[in-house]
Length: 195
Image (tube, rainbow, N blue to C red; front, side, top):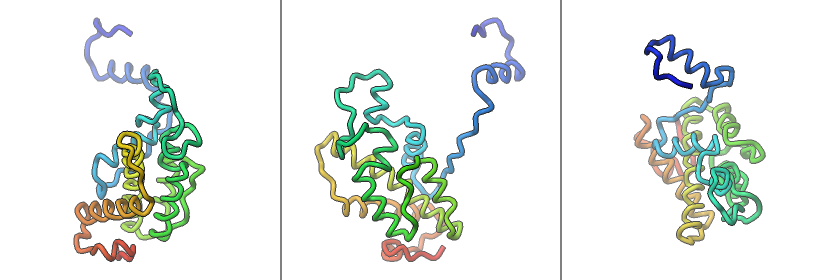
């Protein structure tokens, strides 16, 4: 579309946007959590839309990838939802995290958006849900970092170490970014929090 001869006006901008975007699509309902560091939130937001550089995303963008299977389990094509939810390694991490948080096992057959929505609908107090949501975001971020360390550094991770990294990162986020500055590491490690 040629915009060179058009006069700038709010009406022209609205008309242009209506032509460029489908306003009938539902809006992205991603829930931002201020208790989580920005890069982790932005990463998950991008992962929901499959916009992180997984092997299949890179292949779909035209990069010549020789191997698109998951670098962790080698079972299926590596997509964002596979890395962060369905990979055998991720499943074992989620089992441990949900047990620690005392919540039902996440639906690994769903998608990332559904997982986050399930967390926001838990029958817990608002602030406990927010803390669990922050932990889920950190879990996805650390699963991604773990995948990258294996792919680029050849570092093999142990489930227990990953769990400890998630507990530590989520503890620091909640302690530093919420009003619950007095929460102790032991309370967090036991997930015995009063919020």
